Image (cartoon, rainbow, N blue to C red):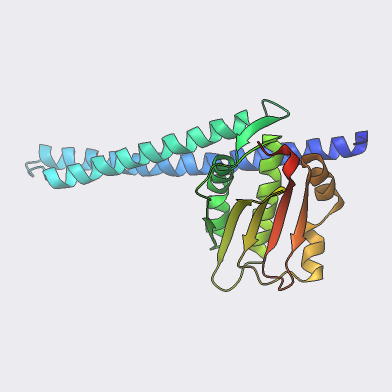
Length: 222
C-alpha cells in the first residue's frame, strides 16, 4: 500500500474512532441524565417527608431500581468502549468473530435508533476464530452497517449473519432493497477496496439485490 493510501486510511481510522467515541459519550451522558433526574426525585421525596408527607417505600424502590439499571447500562457501555479502544493494540490478532461482531453492532445501535432501524445479529452456534486486524475489521463492518441502514427495506431491519464455509468466512447483510448501481457506487469505493484487500476480503451482491456478503479469505481461519 503506497503512502497516500496509508494516509487516507489513517485519516479514515481517526474519523471512525472519533465518531464512535462521540456516540458512546452521548449514551453515557443519557445514563447520567436519567440518574440525575432520579436523584432529584429522591430529593423531592425527602423534602415532602420533612413537611409531614409519609415516604412511599414502593416509589423509592422503583427510583432506586431505575438508578441501578442505568449504572449497569453505563457499565456495559464503558466496557464496550474499552474493548473498542483495545482493538487498535495489535496489527493482527486471533479474534472470536461473534464477539467482535456483537461489539461492533452494540456500538452502532445508537446510530441505528436515530434512523429508526433495528440490527438483528444472528450468530452461529459454533465459535468462529480468525486472524485479522481488529480495528480495521470493525471499521469495515461499521461501513457495511451504515450502508445497510441506508438501503434497508420496509421492515426497517438489517440482518447480519456470519457463517463459516469450507474455504472462507462470510458475513451476510440482508433485508435490503435499494442496491441499485448509483447507491452501490457510494459504498464500493477505492478506499473500501484497499481496506478489504488489507483484510483479505471482498464484497459480493446477490442477484436479487436484497443482500450483500462480506467474504474473508479462509486461509486466516483458525
